[in-house]
Amino acid sequence: MLSKEALKRKYNRGDYTVGGHTIPKFAKAGAPEAREPRFPGATALPTGFADSFAGIAGIDEIITDQQAVTEGVRDWWADTMIAETDHRGQYPETLIVRVSTVAAVQAVMAACNAANVPVTTSAARSNVTGSALPTAGGVVLDVLSLQGVLDFDADSQIITVEPGIFGDVFEQWLQDRGFTAGNWPSSFGISTVGGWVACRGAGQLSTRYGKIEDMVVGLDVVLSDGTLVTTGGSPRAAVGPDLNQVFVGSEGTLGVITSISLRVHRLPDYTKAQAFGFPSFAAGLEACREILQRGANPAVLRLYDELESGVQFDHGETNVLLIADEGNPVMVDAVMTVVAEVCQDAVELDQDAILERWLDTRYLTGKSAEGFKTGAGFVADTLEMVAPWSVLPQVYERVVKAINSVPGTNAGSAHQSHAYVDGACLYFSLRGTVEVDARQGWYDQVWQTVNSVLIEENATISHHHGCGLLRAPYVANSLGTGFRVLKDLKQSLDPKSILNPGKLGL
Image 1 (cartoon, rainbow, N blue to C red):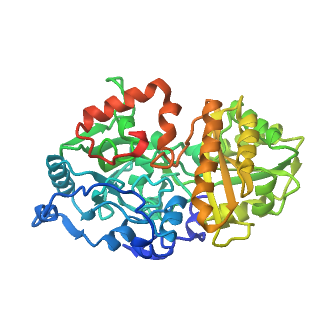
Image 2: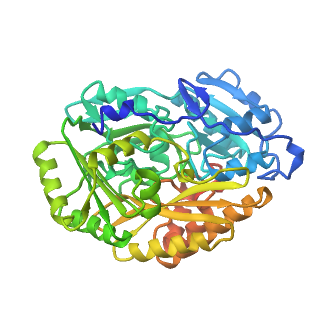
């Protein structure tokens, strides 16, 4: 039920259609002269630069009209929506180059490197941090047409795909052959495998299957000068550091990923679920910790605070914990035995109704706004972070308090969405209603306030959305002395700093 049937569940993809999939759409940018450009800067393109791509095989389209560019780079970041509806959606001079071969990717990179032209790699643009926005102008390298399945080793359970393949297409291909990737992000139908890897994403069943970095076996990557390199490819190795992990989560700042080999799993045919109510969020977190540290790892282990329990499940009187697992019956039954022991003092809830509600709504976009009155001055966003169990309860309390302290905030809330033996991800929702002209100020202030708390608590500022532009100001503080290593990697692999400038704080 959590795999085969979930493909049939409803989700909202948006309005633009590309290759049978839809891409974000909202209000037009309006008159460019109404406000200052969002990312002012000098023209990045040499005169006639687009002509240098003429006749190159695998370059399918070049888009130069700036309004078409604005629409062609639009993402799901709340800040993008604020900016465009506030008539600040313009970028420095930019062109979109759509490619369908690896050789074309190499040719574009070589030309841009020679001319010192910035390159921002883009695909489905479901990102919510601005990681694929061309803030420095230049070339947006659209790899969405790289959608092929290149190889499948069923004996080893390894599949190799191109980065532009959409999540639902990828999963359906596997399920038709009796396998699953086990990666089910909320953006399942509007995101690509390459995007998952570039932003170090996570699916909703990560406690069972792991995050995307746990699935990657090997990569092909085009470097800034057009060189193609291959990393990984082995089940395990002791030949220096794991070079796959240099590029997983690099958000296009170190290279352009052109193929990905991933571990997959046999399609499960057995599932079980349980649901409980806890008197406090802290008590629910303690139960999650105990379940995992006793050795159980259910596919779904999600805890909702009272506000979200009310909105999502009509149980606002408690903190709902949903547990579900799939796989080998012996293992699933053992996991659920541990769950029942840990939660024996909690209030049992109708697990079928709660699971059904979760399955029906888990792909819906804009869930953070659910239950609140929307309007022109309403802003909603989500923030996911991760920390050890020992500090999670106080992080929850402090972050919700920080959100609510910003004038104009409606309410902050959270759920625990991904959990591990040593800690978990808390997924916060932030909502505010202010004057239309005050939206940007409220948004910036609430993010700054919350990240100040996270850095003070030594929490990690992102679990699976990545950093992009949204978290760029906080990356150096979050990584501490390790930030120098990231900067040195950038200098070595991209000495002209043309790859996705401004992201990851680089």
